[in-house]
Image (cartoon, rainbow, N blue to C red; front, side, top):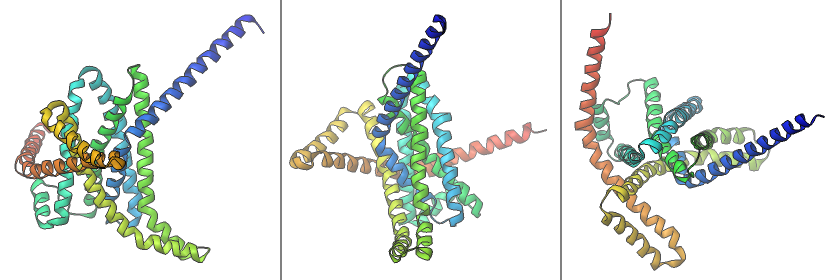
Length: 331
């Protein structure tokens, strides 16, 4: 074998080692970022099953698939390039944009609370903003669109957390890590959601054709327990939207708000943690989460009339204006 060929093979081997090391680095960075974003991922998983409740079993997986596809588009086609562009050119805009998204989560969460507590007022509010559906297909489309909008905010938080954990380096490596996290988290979240919403079908199959009496008993237990589990997840999902939204606002206030707000939250959490040292970490997190939830409730409650009397009428006027302009331009 010629010396030149041996040299070429050595170069190829060296490049392969560098590439492998780079891929290992991307994988490790993606794993670390995924752990950091675990709280938001859990919230995303708890929120989504609520959008499937009430539909026929044959529509459950297609709806989950539509939401998953929308989530992946959000992450890869909108949030990934936007996160990179903003982080390089307009880093100061990221926190205010996340705060706006957090306010939307608070609004969505409080609106769901209204639906449960005051259904008539909630229906009037939906009619006022023009979101009441009139046929089954539009109900499904409406639910999917609402789920994708909520997922967009949660995904933005996930991508921001991921970007914040990455070391300064090549924009291409950062893009690759963001893409790996986006695909991995979407697959994990909606894989779990699909298992949750179809668990009752699995339980029914086990109850009818289980090989052993134990298997049939387990199947019947799953069938009986799933409605309660879905309701619990719906409650958790609503609380998660309010809590995560309030948390985003609270973290934003650390940057743009008066220092007294951040100091008050920190002091309250530390005081409770010091009172019970053995449970310090859990109690500190619980206090911060509770304060985030209260902030989320207040912001969501304030946003309901703001959306109903300000934003919705303005949006309707804008749509009418665009529609009239489109009609004039049509041949």
